[in-house]
Image (cartoon, rainbow, N blue to C red; front, side, top):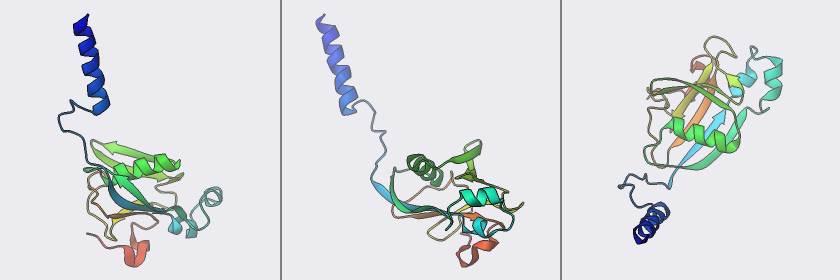
Length: 161
């Protein structure tokens, strides 16, 4: 009976204090900023009237917001977590570990033509890697833009990294 009580106390200690995780916890407390907008879709003549009425009039789905992330998180991780917390619908598809953002806030790829969809930039540069392959660093600014022309309509902002 004494051994059972010792085992129970040990298990409780491990679960309460987090002991036994072999140092595998990620550091938290890192900060980045995330912003989501679709102004090009709002301006597009190809966007359905129904969808145009549903989207925010100014095209801003999520105002710039500072969020906390964990070391090793990707741009996808930050987007997924933030959209879930804000109650904003997001849909992605995967090929292996590579995530592709199909839609945010009911605005999907191809809604404004064959060259339309979601693109992201970090610190005003468009990385040449998918959002699940780009690890966020402390202080990064992640912007998600809806493009109607493979990024050409993003103007001066569109600079590949």
